[in-house]
Image (cartoon, rainbow, N blue to C red):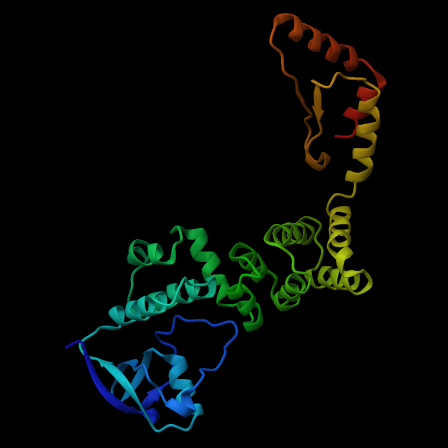
Length: 312
């Protein structure tokens, strides 16, 4: 038999989390333990004279909190640690899909209990419903170093896996920024846009992260909640692309003087940081092509085109 049923003294059950996959954002206590005791046996892994919880970690905590002395348990016999952590995952999956913190914990626990990287990719990741690659591994690993409050928001879905990975690079301000996301209820696209601009301003403009976070917090304290995000973007873009607003204005004003037909589009480089414009137009005949080319050659000699070219 793989398991042996017996009553186990709670004093002999360690609360080490060697096999624990579950991560419950709300951490609600179990109901009815004082009245009815532990109805469903926990699963334990023997470790010398003591035991590690495999399935039922919260039940063990609740029983200890209720002052119980012994609880029913299934003690594994002959299972290796590698098999035991898989059992813990399968038991958790029986209660529904994993959240991202549980996915991260799964990879961690499997690695710690003897699973090789190739085995994790082949057997674990299909159960996690994730694609196995280095980027996803890095993203999941980053979650484990986040503050507990941010991990709770990751588990509940308020902070996306990709966003949490980027957020981890903002230590020691992850909690403060994470609270911005949850308090303002920013969706994943806004989280990504904000962090992307913050990364650019810090890296390209050589702005200290502490100073940047403080500036954004001051904006948050002054602006109305519905205006905070737009105020942040305006501030970050003005610092990241100091020439952009004025260059865009001049570009649009000079382009309007060309009186181009709607089919011809002149496209500026992103934020005027590259050295090439693009032109696009459709045509269905030689006559249309010649007409558009003549128009472009005509505007190429104008002062307005000279002014546009000076912007890059």
